[in-house]
Image (cartoon, rainbow over all chains, first blue to last red; front, side, top):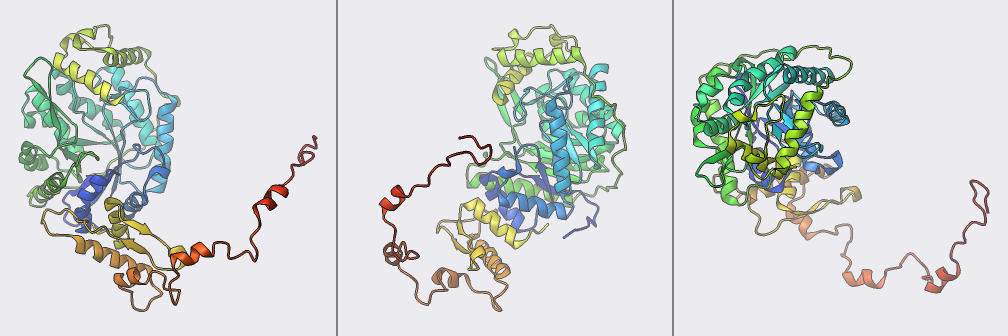
Length: 367
Length: 127
């Protein structure tokens, strides 16, 4: 079953969802053998007992062919406190990796808005000594626990233009000690580009593109800000891929010379009918066609380092207090005016008010 | 990447809610019922019901390895109870519910002969 990627071109695949609407839409792609790689968010299912047979068998077949990628959602990488939750997450990840052969594992930049294990949304943190120290400690712990490369995905949401501008550098410094990789999520870049009026190519160039091993591409939606004409782009994975992403993709491919995988994302439960399914398939095929006809050349890179983390996980009490306060404030606030400026690690006076309102709405939705 | 036909058949069953009665354990063939309105959405707009049948046939072919020549889908649909020279009717089962008992026990038997509780606990000896 193992196949070699003889052309050296990145493999195109999908992020797998267990929902039946998603399965119906993706089935023709599976039947025709069009899906070359699968990404599985392995921490989104509570236990293996909840996995339907087809899901278990599908993961196994892609695992056998070395075409399976692992993606995490709930580790909360930049959480300043180390709790039983993170220890358990790593323990479960080790078990998952012992059962299936994953090519690599990735997580999201940021910390989770909820203390609960299976809820919340990732929130950004500013680049400073405290946040960087915590992040590097967590990356080392992750790499030490598993024997495959680890990577991080850029975030769609930022409070300010400063956050947007420094995320690329932040990610580069987080992955550097473990020789990790970046997932460049193009729709997340699109969100930042639209929300902060920055050119996409300009923004992409702020990222360490030689560390991009994987690209995510998806659709999203617009949310109108209350009492304003402004619309905020959100990474909701519930619509088709914007035209701009297909247009910029050939250039992105030419910049990411170590790219290995391109993953198309769509949230399960959002494919309402036949037209949605057809659009899903046509987006995937358009993506695949762009990759296959690309003239860009790609070379393989070795990822991952042997690392030795400190015996005890680092805890930053001040940063933790700030994170707790921010989570609470977002959950309880009615609008941006309810968020104070009592943080050591954030200067909320530089935050975009509409983005604060969006964070309030995100927190209430996912917590 | 091509996935196996057996897996595709399982995915088809899950995606379309096709009712499956898997009696492999009983060494009789798998019986699948495909709803008449089942279609597989594809950008080519072709009706993909044939793909479903193709993969289900493939499933049969792979499973029924003891058959020198795989049986067609229609065979299973028509001959569900192939071990019976003449299929048994529903009425047969209703009439012969307790066929293993030479004489069914009366309800009163169970009331009279209810298992008695232990007079003492066999583990700790307490009364």
